[in-house]
Amino acid sequence: MVLLDLSAAFDVIDHRILLERLSFPYGITGCTLEWIKSYLTDRHQRMVIGTTTSKKCHLTFGVPQGSVLGPKLYCLFSKPIGEIYRRHGMTYHCYADDTQVYMVIKPLDNWVNYFSKLELCLSDISSWMSTNMLKLNQDKTEMIIFTPKHLKASVPNFQLKVGNNVISSVSCVKNLGVYFDQHLTMERQVSAIVKSGHFHISNIGRIRSFITTTACKTLVNSLVTSRLDYGNILLNGINKTTMNRLQKVQNTAARLITRTRKHEHITAILADIHWLPVQYRPQYKIFTYVYCALNGIGPAYIRELVNLQVPNRSLRSSSTKQLTVPKVRTKTYGERQFDWAAASLWNKLPNSLRQRKFLECFKSQLKTHFYRIAF
Image (cartoon, rainbow, N blue to C red; front, side, top):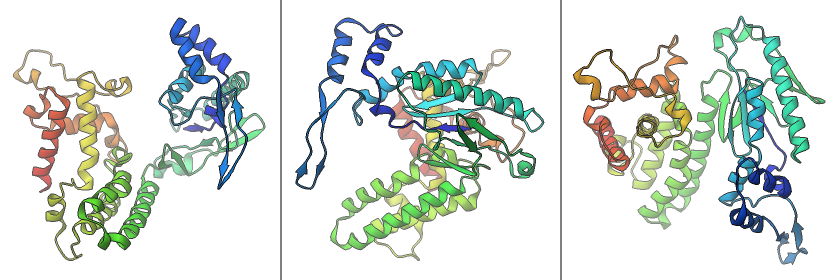
């Protein structure tokens, strides 16, 4: 996987190119185009340091950051990048200005050919960006090769040459706030969550005697629980020792809110404040994604991974909304794939729960289902 880094992507978008792109490929014309043009033009910015204010600077490029339209306009502006990836046979994902390109290579494949294709693709991307007033930050572009531990020695030490820069493989990358290590153990990510969680718990603990239980719970949810939940679907299937490290953070946070001592049993405390244990929270997300995909309200790339069982003949189980479980070769990696985990877990849900017609009703009853298991 290669993670591309763009220099000040939102700040250097050329308004003329953007408006032309909106007009021709997307067919946005007339009053709507004039609205967008008005939104972009005649903007100014200035710097304030203490009581000193700089002069206003007229902005002739860029889209407003922190706005709803900013990321959307950037995605529309940069859509041709996807065509370049597809032309080179590369798989990619884009989230605003964060782009990741990846490909699957078997150990016995010709790695030289794959890396040559990737270098050519990145070269075309860099050229397109230069033409469209963007800049690929080659110094911050990273590459990582994911591999099982037992095959680590057989992975060639390849480097990518992009322009005048050489990109070497690293052992860990940070992608959209989540750390990925080359063996996908997620230990680096868990360590970061644990460190951050204990830091904020310690700070809240200093003021615990001055705030109410409700205020403390709000702070913990904002600073600790949010970090436990962010990207936690990637932690489904990791080893229990690593997951227990996260559970200890949640336990400490729960004791802080309820002001209970370390020796008191944690199960009753978690049930009292209505917190699902850490191990069930990724599964809750998986079930929600599957439900959305089956009911046509999930993203296309999730719907492609969820397939209903279609029996050869009519059976009573045909209407139970069970999923086809794909075949996998390994437990460590294969059973952590979204399609396998989603199908395996979904098929174990009670049929009445799978048949819910409304998302909010499904989520409410799903949480009740997990509470019965956990407590």
